[in-house]
Length: 87
Image (cartoon, rainbow, N blue to C red; front, top):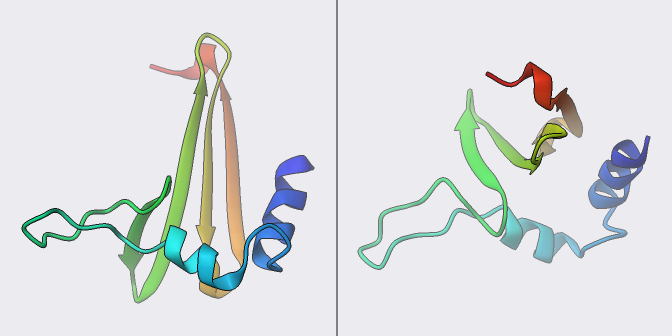
């Protein structure tokens, strides 16, 4: 439930301003100008005309997590895997 509350607060602009959130989800670039699939702490990709952003986490020996968001759809997916489920 905490992650759902986090997502609502992020979407509604209660954690960051819209400009800061957009900056965080803007791909960076290399010195030569190549676009990277990474913003400020978030992976970024475009699929079927929609921007996807995600972040992963790992608590070694405990859990592996994925937080995936489709901002235009106001949708997110959270996955929590126990360490024993990891290959």
